[in-house]
Length: 72
Image 1 (cartoon, rainbow, N blue to C red):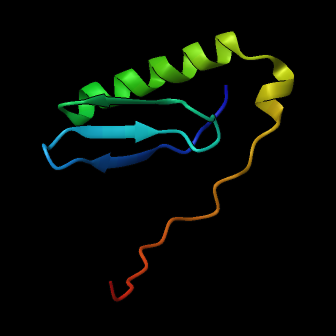
Image 2 (cartoon, rainbow, N blue to C red):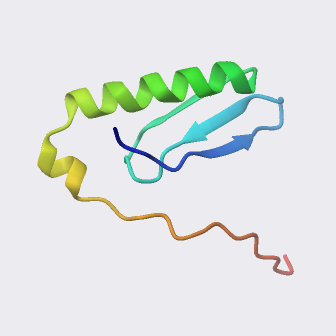
């Protein structure tokens, strides 16, 4: 059993987007959070199936997410 951090965002059309920072390119989208959770689990499983153990070991751990305001 492995555990991954999932970042969930919502786009301007209300679609939820999930990504896994530890797994480069592992992301999906859905209209509901329940559907998104199922899809991201599937995306992670598929990612792990097609990548080598070495590729999986070469990742960064997520430390945190911040919002930063700047004058623009």
